[in-house]
Length: 342
Ligand code: TYM
Image 1 (tube, rainbow, N blue to C red):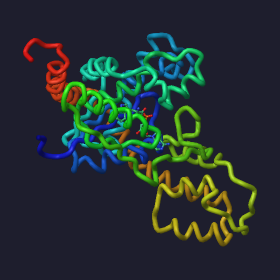
Image 2 (image 1 turned 90 degrees about the vertical axis):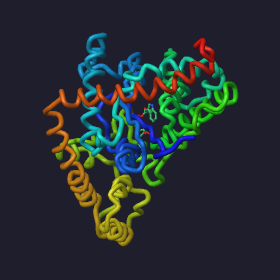
Image 3 (image 1 turned 135 degrees about the vertical axis):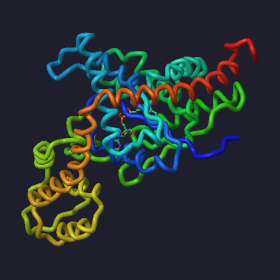
Image 4 (image 1 turned 180 degrees about the horizontal axis):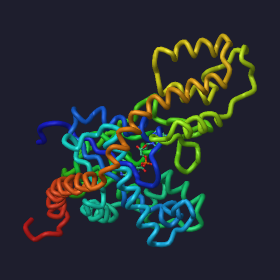
């Protein structure tokens, strides 16, 4: 029987700068819940490797030579660690680590591979999307949900805060836990996704899901100029200032909802009655986003000035995570017959 706090596990892939969709959809929940839960929060660098084949880790000049890929991944990993600290994750409260410092997840993923069928994994949305786009999908992309199952099940997650796009991955982790437990006896806890209703799918500047791959993001640490530029390009219809507008059909208003404050009710009624133009609505939105980001950006700059401190934190977090992972893997190895002392 487990005692103490419930366990929360989540991660972000270091494949570029995080955006406000990542923050509101998942990262904010990690910060908000760090007192109440025993949190394992990681940088999913092994998962990021699945982007290598499609060149997503190449630098902006498009140079995806092996050296650049490695440099970019290492830099993105450090940057994401700084981001996590800047939004308020407290390394004294949470175990903060990079996924590759717990190689046990790759070992567990292999064991899971051996109890998972190909037709089952072929039904995953992300795999189907990748196959539709790429001529030749990698084994890594195909197996992505199984590595993610290992991330989640190894530390014994009770809850996994994520955005809606990860829902199916949590379902696969649950199926995998069930299957392993059925074959080898009760071993893994059943994780629940924590998908926060109003921010399950944060829209981007074009109204689709905000995503690094759609070029519709607002960076979590963007400058005021970048914020203004991104907001001003949000497409709207051609209604004039005085015409009534439907806030539910407006891509600008959809982003206003992230900052659910007293002004939102007033803004909604100005939309419905008429009397606000899209330009003004955008200016208000840009100001709100800037006011929210400015303190995060300042905190980030301070932390980024001492990368050694951040690397040391990650090393310490990695050791702690690895100790916990190894303990669970000893149990798993015994159950599947990889050790003599059954
Ligand atoms: P990643 O790096 O793509 O995204 C990180 C988190 O941000 C959420 N998210 C969003 N939420 C709401 N609206 C959006 N527009 C939006 N865009 C992204 C994602 O749902 C995610 O929660 N596979 C994961 C990383 C991972 C992981 C794990 C997560 C690896 N192992 C184990 C949880 C548990 C991913 O690619 O996230």
